[in-house]
Amino acid sequence: MTAPVRPPESLTEPPTPLTYPGSSSTAEVPTSLASGLTCEVCGAAGPLEVAAACGQCLGALDVAYDLGPLVGSDPVALLGRRPRTLWRFRELLPPIDRAVEEGLAVESSPLRRARRLGELLGLDDLWIKDDSVLPSGSFKDRPASVAVATGLGRGFTAFGCASTGNLAAATARSAARVGSPCLTVVPRGLPAAKLAPARRYGARIVEVRGTYDDANRIASLVGERLPIGFVNVTLRPYYAEGSKTVLLEVLEQLSWTPPEAVIVPLGSGALLAATARAERQVTSLGWLDRSPGGGLRLIGSQPEGCTPIVDAFHRGADRTEPVQTPTTIAESLAIGDPASGPAALRAIRRSGGVADAPSAGEVTDAIRAACHREGLWVEPAGGTVIATARRLRASGVLSRSDRVVLFLTGAGWKVPDVGIEAESSLPSLVLDPRRFDADEIARWLNGRDDAPGEARAW
Amino acid sequence: MVTVTLGSVLRQAALGVDLRRFAEFEGTVGEFLTQISVVGGPRFRQLLFDGDQLRGVLAVYVDGVDIRYAGGAATPVTRDSRIDLIPAVAGGAGF
Ligand SMILES: Cc1ncc(COP(=O)(O)O)c(C=O)c1O
Ligand SMILES: [Zn+2]
Picture 1 (cartoon, rainbow over the protein chains, first blue to last red):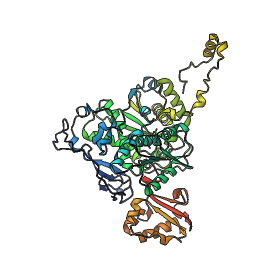
Picture 2 (cartoon, rainbow over the protein chains, first blue to last red):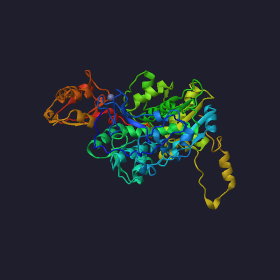
Picture 3 (cartoon, chains in turn cyan, orange):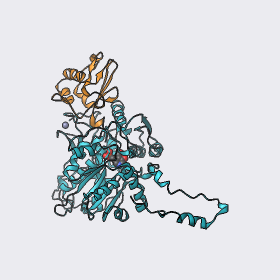
Picture 4 (tube, each protein chain N blue to C red):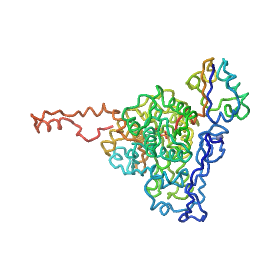
């Protein structure tokens, strides 16, 4: 394990004595049950410090937990009265200072039944975890918030990230909320609407003439020179923990009965790998109410044009082959060299899940279907997930009665132009108010086979 | 002059090694890494190589290009080259 790159300042762990309902342990436990960092490759263990790579083998580091005091506890009694923010799962997150909890709270997002979309897909028990409603417009508010909270405890006063767009907004927002400056590094050419939130929150933006992987390398090298906590580089193990809260919320919202499958968009693979860790942890706590043999299948989805994880899955490989120049309409997922690719592959296989890659056309059709059937405008990362649900239902991987939860991780308003060509086949009628004629509107409305508001066939 | 940037884990492992002595190096990046691993000591070598193979989790860039997209270990290093060595998890790939 590596020594910290900066002088360690101990994280403030409030010594609140807590007894956990139902737990046999009477020991006083710290609020967070995180016990250290472990290497996902060689298993080396070390303290909670600022480090992203193992000092023995350069492998990725994960936060490890000593869950003992919580085993056998009752999640309903434990979580019951806590505010509905991601900190309600604080035992399963890195230790953070209580003083920053409120400022960096991310409210829970809704889990909704999606009957009309389910009808179209042939899935009778379809649910949507809607992270498009989070404040900066994507699930990235979760990992950004946990990373900034942890970084503050390690003495960082400035934050940054490498981003395909959504993390820039989320990091900028978290930094603004604690009064820290923010530096984001992104590939040039993102939609203006995607970068707008980061600009509005006051971040400095470096646009790299290259890919996300170029942006990431640059962030990494800048992090070696300047005391900036790059959330997904310098603070990576802590950042990744924040993404666990998507599944934790889903499970709580389903009264701790896991669904048959969740479909997760894959960029770096961090969200899917975190989802697997969350499931493992609540399983060992005994929190899940499982039917016998009822496993949660983790299904990963990547869009055509950037499919390193899906390709490795189909090849039966443990590692991904990088894609040098991703070309996809889902630029959030345009990560050609996914750092958590191996972890995501392991998690998918262990769960009995699959990896799938829909085409660009299927993604835009899916975005339109969610708009027209659920009133939910998602960005292409969400379209990718919906399209995968449709494909796997059609191929029989998913059954009609399976309870399936779609992780819809980003808002459509950030990528306003994708699929717009199809929508422009419903042009508006331009009226002269002085020569208004209701019959003209009636004729115009009736002149089309597909009534407005209905999704056309896929 | 060949310039080298090491990620912090590598820098700590290579503590005290003066990489400026390779400023005039010319050859392949594979040869370059072998030479610096010899002077960097066993811990440093262990981070660069797994046996004889470059570690998969080590990202190596010559003039800003990942060597997997260039000639791999045979990628040429010239006197003006800039070499970046960072853990793939914190560099060449993102979370
Ligand atoms: C909207 C959205 N969904 C999913 C992802 C993928 O997340 P991860 O990189 O953790 O796999 C991203 C990543 O940028 C994203 O912006
Ligand atoms: Zn290791």
